[in-house]
Image (cartoon, rainbow, N blue to C red; front, side, top):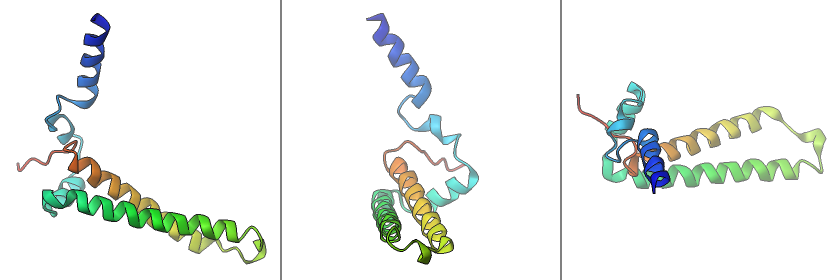
Length: 110
């Protein structure tokens, strides 16, 4: 039982008490502004939309790479870098809003 209590203590130190206040201090001002600009009930919808779009762009990236294995002379770096940037940005923002919808990020009004 002592091991279980120790695990609970470590988890509460890592993730806070579960009310979201522990993570609120870790948000930057840009993150707070972003969360405050969108209604909290829409966090899940925004997260799923961004994750889906990021996955589609990422799959297009992989499709292009596999297609270019047959024609390596025609491969272009700049479009692929742009696709990777767009995909990673959308996936990162989608993950951010998914965590916000799970109340891991709390936005204080002060």
